[in-house]
Length: 308
Ligand code: SF4
Ligand code: SF4
Image 1: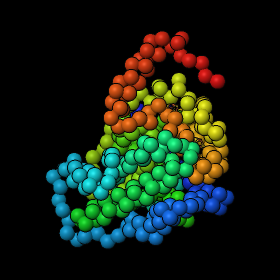
Image 2: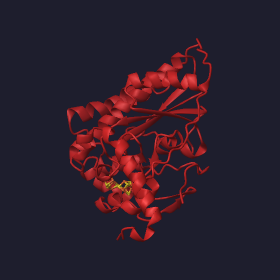
Image 3: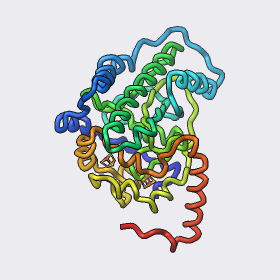
Image 4: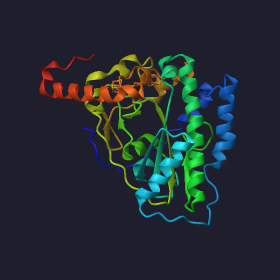
């Protein structure tokens, strides 16, 4: 079982998925003026500013929590929806990537509920691209802010838009920062927005506190739900857990997902159909329901619905 607090040490390996998307599917296609602007801004402006000079005027903090609070407040004003902190661990850093900083700020940005509801139609894919652009700006600004306080800081975007490989596996960083729990669909499920988020990370030498992993009942719920696997048109989501780098988890086959992803300019059906995809104001009640349902099936395993 994949349990809360599991220790995995193997670094992830980058399998050239983004290059494959660009070369085989010419993705992202920059179909509208907005999409063209977002992709160009990510590549030409934000990407170059993820690193930069550090101020020689260092601000002292009374504790890691004090520093975290300053960063949390700033990141919120820059547009972040959820923020967590963790040490940088080997299983978050892609093989071959050089990440020298020891602490990480993990940021989540909410995607619009209505736009995601339209999946697989293009408003959903366009929303995902907009969210990458917005979260890119949030981490660029927050990294600049940390550097302005005298500490090195580097933003880590998802490298969908340049030839550089990715550096940080954001969902694993988010898991350790206590932002959510991994769902069957391979995305972090958060207590605020379910899987309807995009993540990005900043690493820094400013000492920050370690978040605690959370248990929302997602793992228990997924093993009786399977909706994302049923609805995925590419049949990309596995119904059985497999051992991957020490994680015993559900896996996504990117080569089955990508043709659908490219066909629909972003797809996103798995996010849309997931029962955890709720409006923020409904989440608290829903999570109470999840807890009750999980408890019921723990007490009455014979009632578990049969799956295909
Ligand atoms: S994005 Fe679409 S094709 Fe890819 S895993 Fe989700 S539902 Fe399946
Ligand atoms: S759709 Fe169901 S099985 Fe898939 S991640 Fe959401 S809760 Fe888990």
